[in-house]
Image (cartoon, rainbow, N blue to C red; front, top):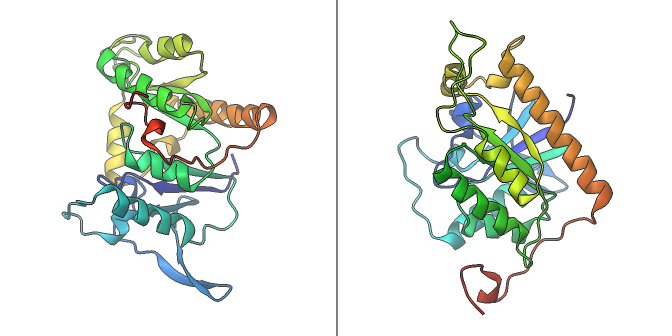
Length: 250
């Protein structure tokens, strides 16, 4: 679609973006920007990428407490030369914890996209994720919900859909929470294969997958435009007491 895009792999404990972008063996270079040394994100497929995976061995476990993880994230944000971007995507780990809070304290987040599979166990966590972003002390606009692994269509039965993990669970959750439903991604073997070999599935030209990802992207961009038109800029959050944590009762 012609946008300048960067991805920050914020899943400190399980970084997978380098593998999925076929840059697992790459290392960010140092560049001099106005007299300061900055990291230059690795680039592939026209997307700039930074991940803690570039700085660890493939079999090395990252066993860090929250403050250490937050410091690493801040370095990849503020000590990197991202250049001019239209979108900086932050790939967050599952759940609601230190990583999420640290990023929202460091950056003004335009909006959040929540991804879930359709079954109730996954939807329960997705609902908590939406609640976190909508918390008064955080107040990050939720751009919408995406349903992953929505259905399976066998190659020999192209007109059939099998809802292996349940039908339209994420769509129904979006309606219940009154947030946009951004679209669905089917359960397709080639998505897994593409991720394993580092070639994004969205690049599979002339396939239903390409159409699904293109429609999904259009919906996300549309929601970003609507959010920017209707709402004031988000500010980096300030949580100075435990009252800012949803699990703590006042």
